[in-house]
Length: 268
Ligand SMILES: C[S@@+](CC[C@H](N)C(=O)[O-])C[C@H]1O[C@@H](n2cnc3c(N)ncnc32)[C@H](O)[C@@H]1O
Image (cartoon, rainbow, N blue to C red; front, side, top):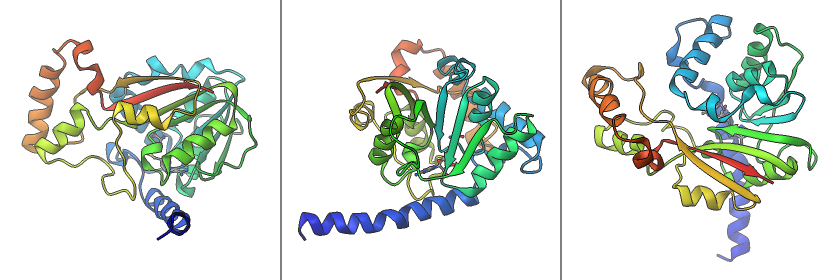
């Protein structure tokens, strides 16, 4: 097959994959098992916020959600809007997009139930083909999204295109060379959303290559073991009683590169 024929086939496969991804995320809510409140209520959103920021203690230390007052911020793959609400509360002029209609509906409810209605522009859109002009935003944020899309390079390019020169992009992907990936193999416990149509993990050099269109890139590995309510039985006991404590006695500089989340801070 000629190169042209192959790229034609790949082009044709792309919309089907995007459809499959939208379908998957319309059926699922990230971290849903962490609350027993009714979906879409204030208690539900608050439970998922508590869970997220307990597990991801690093996130508000690295991303100053309150520090973007009056800045034009785009969140790609905003899910139910947990981070987005923090940007809104901090006064950012935020636009949130997600492939899944259900995510956008829940993000809208989340904003409204927190008394912030009308302060976010939320739309269903594909992060690989953003419906915005070049140079529209000062900041683009996508946490846990590039690894789930069909063509991550295309999404990165789109995020760069809509960012004004000198603008800031923040992304998070999963680290293939990490404590959690290794533990999941050793313990035979599958990762969350392992059944998603796309779930890619990156080494630090692979992630850096993905972002090579940006002028400056700094990658910070984060997300070290914290106690979890997610796993039960002897594996959960082993993890919570032994693994978390022992791992966290190792000086962080020795294990930093094995963090599960790779946060990237980029400048266009
Ligand atoms: C693991 S969830 C993360 C949600 C949220 N960012 C968070 O950290 O809780 C992944 C999200 O990415 C969205 N997504 C995946 N591919 C996308 C694309 N091409 N364009 C827009 N959103 C996408 C999914 O619909 C889903 O809501």
